[in-house]
Length: 136
Ligand code: SF4
Ligand code: SF4
Image (cartoon, rainbow, N blue to C red; front, top):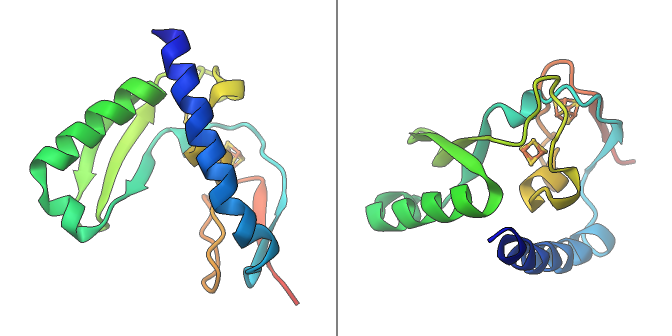
């Protein structure tokens, strides 16, 4: 089962790479991220995955999505946040000192954090080692 998950994750990461390439080189954000991760693991305590309002209304869709994400990424479902259209998870791989116990195989949501919006200032957690800097 572990190897099946890794095989699927490779495709997810390839998809992520191809999705991010145009954004990185063709449509530059107004913001860039500087700094480095302090490996505190605070961002792994509650992972907010955004879905569309239409997906939010589909109970079956949400159940399948939650089951798939929990299985593939070893996440644990915490709650559905209706005010932000998000499903909230935590992760089995977060070690007691905050570091990631699955760093090489971590999913795209972890690799892409902190997310950089094109126009709005990225929001970072307090004491995060990264900071948002406006592009000139
Ligand atoms: S909150 Fe920031 S410094 Fe801490 S683990 Fe997440 S990205 Fe790294
Ligand atoms: S896979 Fe690693 S980086 Fe991603 S949420 Fe889990 S502990 Fe954090």
